[in-house]
Length: 106
Image (cartoon, rainbow, N blue to C red; front, side):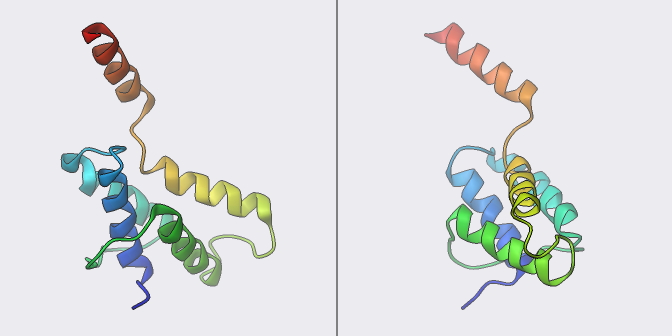
């Protein structure tokens, strides 16, 4: 089964949680950020797992088909995929706080 874009949003958020990029309690926020980037209204839950790069490719292809990115423009593709990954990582302050907490404990 090939996931829909809405399912790929959920699968990408799940992969970010598994990778430790996003805490489980922040998964819904991550999903909402991805939905906004994709101009989608609601998530569609998916069964199974998908690597983040595969989910990003599905989302890019969907965005391309709906005119959210320009075809044949590698820079636009790179920026779009980077924005997807940006939505699956914590903001800088959280990273700094986590680093400070872990560094202090070592």
